[in-house]
Length: 112
Image (cartoon, rainbow, N blue to C red; front, side, top):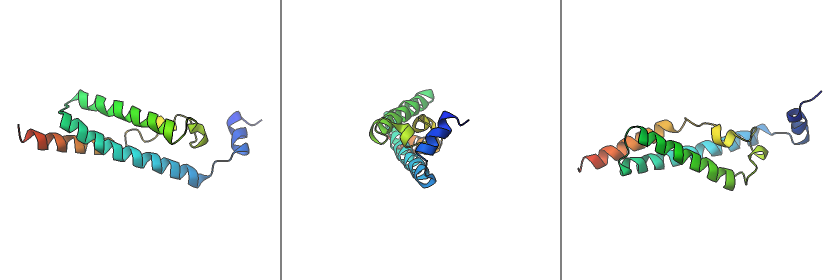
């Protein structure tokens, strides 16, 4: 007996290239926006947990916007799991965020 997920894959099979392209697009958008938000956090002078809270809020905001715009409210159609748009590659862009955050903060603190 096939599970509901298996039956759904027989009806609408997931093409591996499309799933990989969607994941790559998601990763690209997250990496780009995390660098921009890192620079914003540095410019705002956020330190310690406030900076990481800013990252969490911005990542959630970007995921929500991608849910609305890219997936058009139906992420299960474009990703294996409907929560992949929120949970896939969540901490991958974090080093880019920290790099831009500390760089912008250091450049602005020189002039204080």
